[in-house]
Length: 245
Image (tube, rainbow, N blue to C red; front, side, top):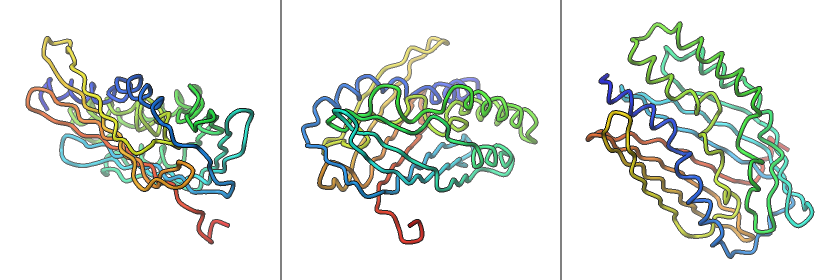
């Protein structure tokens, strides 16, 4: 892998942070009345990260969630139902760490009256859990039987995979996105003097009465010197199935 490709991998690991503020500002445009159901729901979040060799890391976590009124907004409580991780064989130990780690700090989430996630209240692990996960994952990668280039690239993704998500956390409008697609493009000045571009697209599908979407997808495309890297996150919200009670 070239030095520029390694740099691209590092930039890609930081990309979601770049899209946070502008896309959060767009949430203010949501006008739909937010009225979530009182019955429990299943929230599924799937994280896709491409590696340079064409392989992927895919992390899926399912939560049983419930909305309850809380002051002038809502509280979202959630419990982890299960987690699955699909990764190349040399990352098997890292996949097991991610599959078994706790989600301390992700719930409860607190929403305002429009259904927007209040700042810093969801989508992130607590700092201690995150640091423990990162330390364990780095040790696994250092010991992995893989080329040094692959280890460097995988290390660039640690901030996302070990945290179970992107550095930006969940979109603030996750539970009431409205019908509009949100797009932000930003030019990047890179340390080596080159130029890159980051594009963040967030789109909701299947809006339900009360504002909840059936599906939200966030796609981040990083372009650098003719190279393109795509990462993707998908959230779905569905009724609880009979086997979950």
